[in-house]
Amino acid sequence: MTSRQQKDIKLIVSETAWLLWKCRNERVICQKEIQPSQIKGRWVAEMNNRIKMEYVRTLKSKEEDKSKSIKTFKERWLENGTIAELINGKLKMKLWDQNL
Image (cartoon, rainbow, N blue to C red):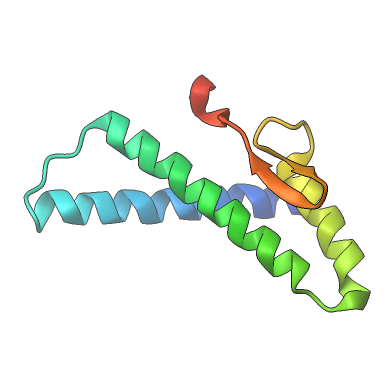
């Protein structure tokens, strides 16, 4: 496993842990019942938001770093076209949660 893949896994695990922590707090503190399907939907929404934010950050990177940033972004999120794709420079999210 490459260093980049390890970073990607750490990112997904940390996002998942944060979401579970928030859901736990809603359940324990707010005494709100949360269904597993709600957690799945929120996870997909959080990951989609994370991908979109990373793309915006990539576009705002300095000109000399931009091509490297875009390459890294594509390798991380667009490699097999399952999660998202770039069409004319615009990020298009897919319904990638169907297999979860």
